[in-house]
Length: 423
Image (cartoon, rainbow, N blue to C red):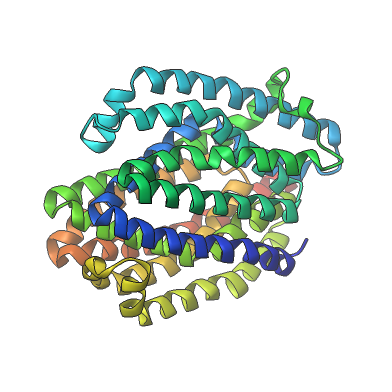
């Protein structure tokens, strides 16, 4: 399936997900407020870290090798069985740990033990959360785009219904419980869609862990784990800094800005993961890879620029519509955030090439360095420019990241091609 067809099908799911996100943002803005947004952001970062450590770290490898071995069913089955066993084992381990330390985790995340029971909900549903992510990775690698889109649409609807109802009924506590369970419930939809495929069988999701496959997973797991630590942890540090430097309300403004960015960029970011990762995994020559990257900058990057420009122009209309008048102070973040978002997409086109070609050392180094620089730049820029400095730091960080990726990614590819040619 080519980039255009993938983008069109993916665009349908994105439109639905974007609409549900906008509705949810409005519900959350009304029922939890800016300070509640900060708490939700902290919990989402925690979920991202735990689910990765609990097995979803292998999902990028599942996408890559399912696509790469598209002509070898035996190898694909070995990939899925090994991944399914790893996900199951680690999910149960982390379920046990979260259940034991739920009160301490609640205090670490929320600075109160009042939400300990939320962690219990999360622990109970963790296995379904990760199995759903695994099945989505398999569908992605098999290029079952229609089924992948359908599963994503179902997830969006679950998110809207469950989060909306619980947030309206129970406020912040209900919203946190919804975050703990809705993706897990979507597992049964994704499982049914997979079951309807000729190539699928339940026995493919468990079995003996193949040492060779596990070894292939190791590099991708290392990248995913580092990313799962660096990105959410850096956001949690920045959010805590904003709470300390300003207050929880201002941290909520920044969280709302992050959510808005994620919503309008969704078509771009999901196209990168659904089309680019499997496609780049298939390509071997630098010439083919450069051509694919050029297509990304020709079609995907302009979407991010245009989207950011429109969001900036409409900011005074968007804030009260999608959030509430209580969020109006976030308007000073828009200009810098929109420019930074465009730079982020420009750099991510190359970052997905790192994943597709397993540039483990470069990826890990970049994640650590630029997570640290985002924290340092936030501190520096807010001291100089005030609250808007948090978005100025975002812009500067991704400008530096893009420049670094532009040099190092193709330098490594060229070196690999030269080494291969000499053999």
